[in-house]
Image (tube, rainbow, N blue to C red):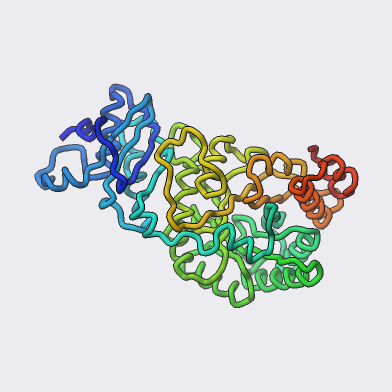
Length: 421
């Protein structure tokens, strides 16, 4: 059996096949057919040599097939029987496992996955999704707006609660922990949650709007669920989890606990495997897997701001989460999500109020816009920064002339003078 035996360019994928699209750059002395076949072989039933245990039934029923090669773009079909429905770690161990270390490839990047109905229906998906989140918060017709507590680390629970209160009273819908704040000596988790949720209640009473705090529960799985249960007991509506570092096993366990909490997914560490355009795994793959796993909100990039991520990549993720029409030239067949709910896209990273018209032009209204330094760095402080964000969003979604609103709303005018717009 040779690697090239896994190349069948006359094969038409079955509706029940799981499809993968790779960028394959062969190693020196290896042609694209051999390299592509190596990927299909090692991610399904093959190995480097013939084995006596390879039965004809296994070969016929379970081998992956390279069904298209266009330059360095390789498409592979996997029989659905290779996968355990709902077991996302196993999906990755299969399609994105040993293949990245093979000598036959110089560079390899998993660009996209398309799941058959059997795997979609075997997943829980989001408990709330876009509409469920909107109903809970009572926000319709505009993006949700929020901030991240800054500095990331160092504030004690009382100090953080004051930041939460100022941001929410200023007009934001949500305030969240950053990715590396969990339960450190300067900010024990339980005390921080209690004080921050009390700040939410005060802000709700004063504004008449729903307000939420998103505590980072990321930890060992059982501890993560224990923390989420505490949030629920204290009256919280949200939890945040670093889904890459916690892993899909932890995320699936949190979702399976079914605590009635909205799950906000941070993608910290994703760029370690997603940034190199010739090797690793695209953010699009992570977005699709996170939707299957059951997050309600997911960071996908901003196009503008400080974080890497080109427009097409971000828009592909936005569409995959169910918030826009598919981007033209999709790499694989359109994904049928069945009853899996859409997920709110989160734009966060180096944003300020002057970016808001562009952000809404890019994402529409089904998104969460988050501003860290773009709120707390306002010349007049956190409350003024929050007010500027809210004024800019309402101007951009309410058919108002943005520049007229800037001249009328002093906090927004100061933000634009400070950061530009």
